[in-house]
Length: 231
Image 1 (cartoon, helix red, strand yellow):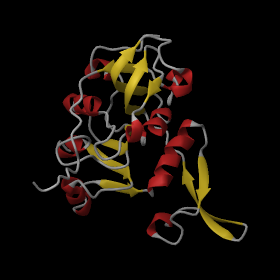
Image 2 (cartoon, rainbow, N blue to C red; image 1 turned 90 degrees about the vertical axis):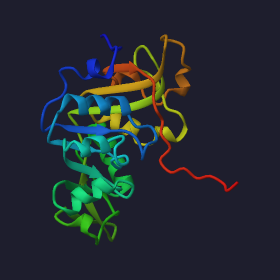
Image 3 (cartoon, rainbow, N blue to C red; image 1 turned 30 degrees about the vertical axis):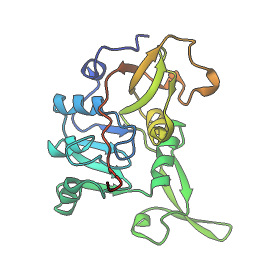
């Protein structure tokens, strides 16, 4: 199977359609698939449902797709760094399915593992639990959460071999592995592609069996919150 493509646009060719669900890795601006997001913007695909911890920041990351009104629904746990995200949600222009952060990660992991649903105590007694099945286990109440299976996963890794075995760098791993596994097709961008057999098998964070298409590119790596000491 050919996995390496020349650009983000080439890697997404034939995969995008209006109304699709996309699982996106990243946390804030850390470990986001910025090249693939830009390619989706350029493709003009609309009415997207995107499962991601948040939506980047105004004008960058998934925030670019909010600016172009390509997103219909966000499945997220945090909206605080994106004013346009908040504006569209509060004005009723954007659907938002709030998830506790750990629940969102587990929903992606469950979807990738073929688990249709699971029970959790997180969210019981809050708006998160409204409309969801409740069940008691050992005297404690839990709610049923469903696994996420996306039409497409877009993720970013630090390094991968030609077969897609990938290593993430430090906290940039975040949501990328569970997001990668829950998509019917996974497209991954990396900073470096190395020959097969180069990477230590014990260091692999994501097996290549989950990765269908792969690109190498240059990344901007913006800093979301810059903190400096006074001179």
